[in-house]
Image (cartoon, rainbow, N blue to C red):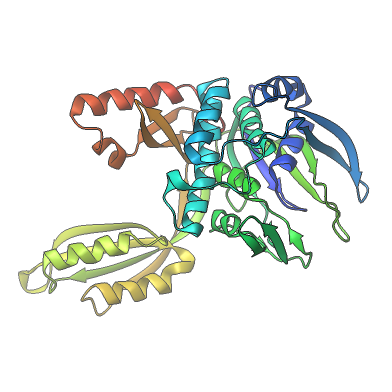
Length: 399
C-alpha cells in the first residue's frame, strides 16, 4: 500500500482490457505481485498467472497470462458471480469494488439483451480469467490510494467479433453501453480495442475527461501490453500516477435554463418536471414559488443540464411546459471527487454516493430511494450504519 493520495490517468493507446489493466497496475506496483498471486490461487481450481517483461513497437511493458489448468468454466449468472466474488474478496473494500465492476457489466448486458439483471447470461466472461481480472484489479485499486481518475479519449476500433450470440460489431454492444458518455476516437486501426471487462473497470473508475486542475507530482507510471499486434503503434495501456498536493475539484461547465410558469396547473407541471428530471442530459430541475405580474402566484424553474445538451433540453422544456420563452446562461461548476458504489445490508443492495472533502474526509450518503424500501425508521438507521461501517476509512480509491 502506498499511503499516498493519488490521481490515476489512463492513456489507452492500444485500448483497454482487463489483463492490460492488471498488467499496468503491477508494472507500476511490483511489490503487489505476490499478494495478487496469492489471491489468484483462491479464485478457482489451479488458477495462477505469469507476469512477463515484454516489448511492443520498441515500448517496454508487462504482459500477463493466466494459467488455467482446469477446463471447468465459472458460474454463468449474476447471483453466482456475486457469491463467488464475495466469498473470495479478502476484505469489504475489495468486495465493494469487484461487485461494482460486475454490476456495471451486468447492467450493460441486461440493457442490450433486454433481460432482468438476475437472468443476465455472461457469455463473454464465463472463463475464470475474466473473473480474475475483476477481482485482482479491484484488489490492487483498493491498496494504492486512488482518489480520482481521468482518461484520454477511448479508441473504439472497428470490424466484427464472434461471440456466443453470433457475429457482433465492434465495440460489442455491452462495451458500447459501458462507454456511454466517454470521449472516443477512431484512429483508423481495426479490431476490438476495448473489451467488456475493460469497459466495466473504466466505468468503475468514473474518470473525468481531463486531468484535475492544480499542481500534481508524477510518482510513477505503468505499462500493460495486450496480446494482439496493432499496425504502427504499441498495443499498450499506460497508467500515470500523480500525487496531489491537495484534493482538486473537477471543473466543467453546465447550461442553466430559467423560465416562469403562471398558466399551467400544478398537477400537470409536476408531471412535466418529472419527465425533465428523467432525461439523462438533465442534472437537476429546481422549482420556486414567486409572485409574478399582476400579483399572480407563479413558478420559477431552473433546469440545469450538460452544456452540450442545452438546445435539446430547451426543446424538451418547450414541449413539456407552457412557457413561451426562457433565459439561457452557462456557468463553471466545481465538483468534489465522487463515485457511486453498492453495498449489501441484510440481503438488500444499497447504492451510496461517496465524496471526498478537501481535507480528505470521506462523506457517505446512501441512496434515499433504496432506504425507502427498507421499512421503518429503525431499519433505515441500521442500514445507514451498515453502509457507513462497510465504507468507513476509505477514500475514493478505496470505496
